Length: 216
Length: 216
Image 1 (spheres, chains in turn blue, brown):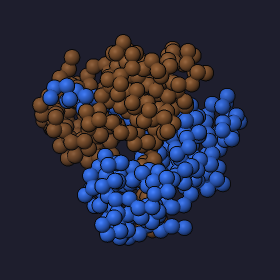
Image 2: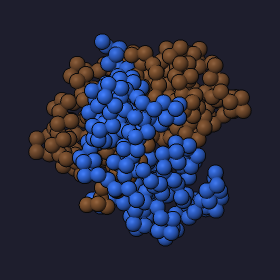
Image 3: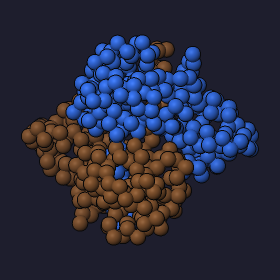
Image 4: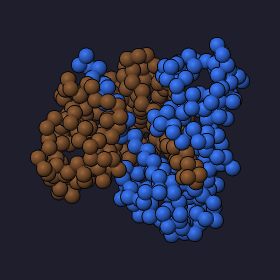
């Protein structure tokens, strides 16, 4: 089992957000058989700048090749092990609407080491059916099954008005990490981490930039 | 038509991201008939702190009620008009897989003033069918139809390997704003804005926090 390094405890949130972009680029380079990448190439691919990249990657030790760049494979390994994500993470998914189905069939999730090990809903018409090899279980079974399935992450893809009740099932089940796709803030104890996937702020940001461009 | 104020041109990105949370909270308060909210209440609901809230909201003029808080309705109006989003924004959606279907049926999108006015795919089995009152059009018709539909935003919900080609159709169509759900960086000219909805970084952040909590 991996262990998070002391140094990486201080990685800023903004750096962690950029790391997912870097990992994406590194994974593509690796797939193309490219072994070394410069910070300038990383900058071009990530729409960032080379000094930002060098600063972010400095958290992951000395993987630079003087005057050339970074070893793709070593850098990927260093980032994932520093973040403690170089292992399988098991997640349960609650809410099998369109968003839930999209997540069950999403190829990028298992490709990054995240495995959905159980799918749950409260709709009797959905319980017992199968989607993409997943049997849909009754949400009432969540607290018991999380332990059995050895899951650490709960994913909420329900309508907003169901999200808090689902979060409470997840707390009962002993989960400490929730990824919430529902447009609803959750109330949870301080030792439970919630990440919100909120695409509305991206729409706001786009509108804002388009509006600004028009008046310039 | 709304106009972005001079002052709001300097709103930091991090503030804009938090605004979507504030707007969510304000919309819920308004729905409950609550007229005034304190920065402390906003802080509790948004998992932020009151001084951050006051700093963020200072971009939107003087809407505080001394010793009480903010007028819910006025503050919402001020935020949306400052961002230039207090009008309808028309978007076209490309890629009618599970994610695309989830977006076509997502209630929060029209509730925030964003209207999907056209849905496109390249699959002959999907073209001409209807989903939730949307006819699915051939992607080849996108450049012509964007003008006719008066759309300003393009939403990409295709597999990653199709995303760049779709972006190029969108550029041909004259769109300057793209919301990209595909796990793929896009290459676009400098006057085109792309926002990436990347839930993988939220999974990385969760794993990282869970790992850190275990070693503390």
